[in-house]
Image (tube, rainbow, N blue to C red):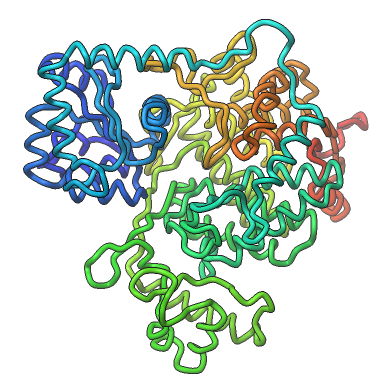
Length: 640
């Protein structure tokens, strides 16, 4: 029988609707049930394309004996972290503070008041590598709850108190300000020390695409002429595009590389990564004219439209890493990897030999079971580009017949905002009106489904219906960013006005008196603490996304109120950039715009007139980080 999750819309929750575990969605009723039964709450947080979430579900949540124990001694609550980022953020902060690490699935044990007292991520079904089994954890927590309740309450109270003390406030003293050139220079120096000169990127394995840091470096180069900043971008973008992180057949980027050389990815593909990287490669082409950057930007844009666009015009969240390998077994990367024998089967002997050399496919393999991830190890390029292109298309056609990875088809407002910005700009740069049309359709969907008449956003939608979760700060900041980019490209003033509506909500509902920002609105559901995190992770934080959008809106409109709010918000970048620049990349990119601008470029002329079109595209190709572009017809009095 289906459990309570059957009534939910989240694809992740629906994956667990047939579990024997008596799951509850996050709700006051779940905690009331725990109080009534006097049992702890098991909180399990994950997302649809999470590999280890699938593993733990198969090993434990689909196991009858485990489910029976859970149902008898716990109230079990399942949360989609992408649908409720506020719940995820609060309890992930507790997990990281207690264990020094985090990840998904996140497993947290709570009192009926929502206070955490024991933490973990993935737990195996049997003891393994020093980890207890999930059943041992369940039995141990139950024993503590039954026999040492006072100790549990003391631990929970101490954790909640510690979390409450982590709130960020500017306090008294000087007015917070954005970074000065010397502080941005310190951030650049710190990044130079962490740069991997051999493989590109920053740090070691696992290696994530540093899209927001790359955006900062491009803007820094544009403002200062720093060749070192540009070289780090070029080397990293070259290495990622040639490696297994990039889908050499279908375009688009995987989530991260498990090694330092970008060879083997974790194969899930996320909308936010591809939107951010599409924009980075388009901006790299704008700065350098690189043909590879142009190709990757367009292929990534086409991947998003082809693979992630929903029938309603929005963009789905992700593609799974796992798929059926053709034998009924789900395996990570099965859709993407190749053996020499598979190449021969599709291409014949001669072309298979060419493909193996070109894409780095060997008998030993670079992945599991002798399979290889396609990459471009030969820096000299193919001797016969036409033949290689034919091989590529034939392999892509053959791959399309394989069982496809699952798709999380919910639309997240923030990530759609990032996609709108990327597609609008890429379409404008490369004369691809279809990409601008796709961006506009997604924006229309957000307005029709996610945005209410009071200027409030729903976090998610699916099949054209809004989800129940309220939008968080990143939704407002990223959607405003997308609308502002669309305004610059199309000249349609409604997008500027809608961005202003969203940013008014940011100023009135998410901003404290001292200029600090919170991830949730002042009237949002009360959790054990109001989440607040300015650091950029896989995507821009709500804090830095809002600061960047406020800054751009101020440049478009001349609003000192929005400019001052942006500069106050960028005070946190001043504090963090010299110490942890890799985790404040979008904030640093916004700081470059603040240092450089505002520069206002207005293109005035008849819509569709060839001269207007040329001038408009020229303006959009300006690299100055503080520049904003507007285009429109001249007014009757000769103004605009």
